[in-house]
Length: 93
Image (tube, rainbow, N blue to C red):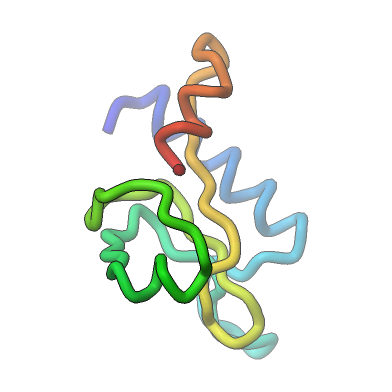
């Protein structure tokens, strides 16, 4: 990880904490952010949601934000300010 990327991650982490997300387990509850998680999506999961977006079943994400039950809620892709936001949107999809 480059120094520039490390600084960006620190900034993102701070913003997430300020917004109330828990990066670590604490007295307030279990962490509800997963960093650079490897996720596997099954065809059944896609069918259950009624959406068949892609046939890709594996991937890496920068941040996965979890709901109060620990289920995936938000995929957050961090990108350089010089990149078009649609690049991150497509990668998250």
